[in-house]
Length: 480
Image 1 (cartoon, rainbow, N blue to C red):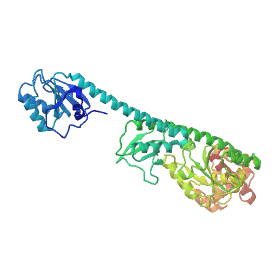
Image 2 (cartoon, rainbow, N blue to C red):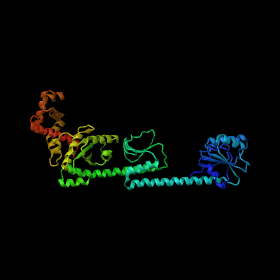
Image 3 (cartoon, rainbow, N blue to C red):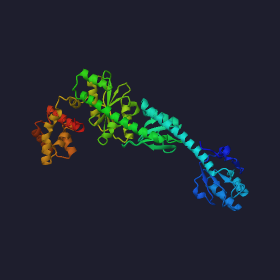
Image 4 (cartoon, one colour):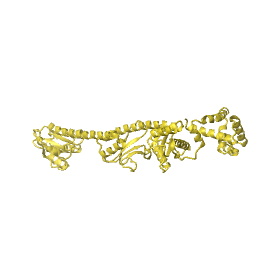
């Protein structure tokens, strides 16, 4: 440890004696030794030094008093005055001024070289540095062991909090990934030190440490470990979601026998013999971040996958309802800077039930709210769920003539058809909505019949056209 002036006096080989009467600062640690014969050494001092001098230029009492004031202002811990050269004893004026300011003074005998004092102080500093270094290395080993022996990020942060004897929080944007005191609110700038965690991504992870605490350098090492672990977690998450996504796509497209689908779902952690609910999150602006994003704590045990560009979460139905968890997912993603739309599927058993829940969730996500509840079973979604039904091809066959005519003539037959179907076949409602004469609407409907072969006024043909438009909307949002 660093040595104090009192301890230095106790070194027999130095033969130092007290010359001043100041009693309150003898136990202050000496940070360094400064040897000087200048009248004003103040500008060369940083504070914490023991000033060693023989007083070669301190001839008068005024000079001696001024010297004391200067080293005291510089923050020196004391003066070691060497006698036997310029002065036979420590000058009384120097002692008096030192007593006035509470600055310790020791007499250094002629036979004690200043370098001997400097060596003892340096050795003490080295020993203190070695102890701190050993403690830091031990801390490094504890944190690395916590991470590498399966404890993960939570165990690492738990040990870090114990070392610093304070609270630790890890956030991603405003979402909390870890809090050493569960349930406590998120930290604010006041009263907390913040350390950014570099991950090479726009995830804005920050380590928060509640003040006061003493950092011996362990926080910097923890930052690096946390960065490595977060990157590893992202890569593992992406790999697991890619694997689960392949299985879910096969189940969704109906290409597997029931027994094979059950077996493969179990392989990625989905028990299809019980009821499961699908949550689907889609984000046109942030689909890349969505696929690698973390999940809120209540959904960490759920199976997540990337299907297409969407994040799909499959969770067992425990009877409490999926709405609250869907809102938690929405809030968690928003806090991470990801603006997504969440669709909720129904709770069903068996692979076909999971498949149907997915299409319900996908259909619900098209409704545009942050969180969307499932609606009644949709014929469109049911048909889309089957790979064997070329519904998109039939839709294109029905609508392509209208698209081509509109493009060639600047017409609005597609718009008129959608309005007609949305207004339950009311010519008057279409005319009012599109600001057209009713005869113009009737003329356009006749053109639609002539171009497509389907008469919107006839129920079977109207269903065909409505289904084609619905498939077109869903296919545009979720291309296979």
